[in-house]
Length: 390
Image 1 (cartoon, rainbow, N blue to C red):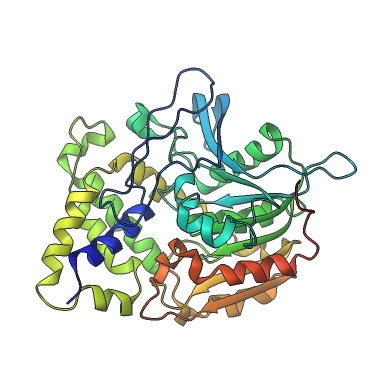
Image 2 (cartoon, rainbow, N blue to C red):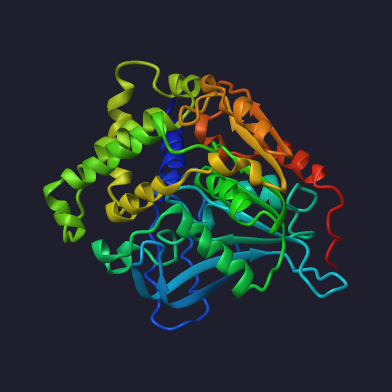
């Protein structure tokens, strides 16, 4: 029999996927970001979101920012964290910057967790923060960046993945003054953004590594679960067109569907071993997911509608290393899409890592210790790395 502690651990990872934690609303004036509260995930077991003391927190502010659909926001905040020190080449340009991109509903804290630090960013690891200058933004609509729950609610501008990438590029080039990235590594939505970067800015980086993503429109199971959650939010009478005063909870039906999708089937079989286990599991899901702001989730899910890199794959110039997992239900290996599409990418490689009873399907992305070696392969493929910063 699987313990309740183990079930909660699984829930904690899934909740991290859609951003269960809440952070303070944006400040009125540009200033250093307030310290984030030390806290673990609601289950207190797995997803450690305590502030990483080695990371530098900062904000970029953009006045009267216009999104691609023409909507504007008077003051847009993009929060970001950095690890490591910029290294400058003989021309004075930063040459060791790596952009690391989070998944749907998450933020930089997930990628600065002890799990990620140990697997990827510690000394001697593939993205060693003593060697590289790591930039980890909170995308618009997420974390401490501007988002609907800050106060605008349904009046928050609609944004798409193209807007997310526009703002990432603005942060890197204008705020941080970086002309060229050494690499981009992104997970899930962040991986999708990485595909977009490779096409929109083909000379802007040496290499791109999308993890658990595909270079096609959001479709199939990935589109279906998004629509189920969106419809459940909008159908709740308490949603009130997005201007709710009492947080609607009907969307949790869609969240339950997500639970069946997000984890690997063998692992989920272990976690739900008999007919008595689902009720305990669902009760914990409902309790813990009830603190999520539905508008934030609604905006983040529908933002993927403009994602479609497939027509531009031949334009990619940088090295591209795609990593997927064969127990990922969102990006089914049975479709053989990477086998079909990657020959279009001039310098493209891909790996589909086999799933096991100890992997987590799509959520294997939250366990970088299971795939960090592939990041090492990617970095080695990029060739000579920048010198160690002293």
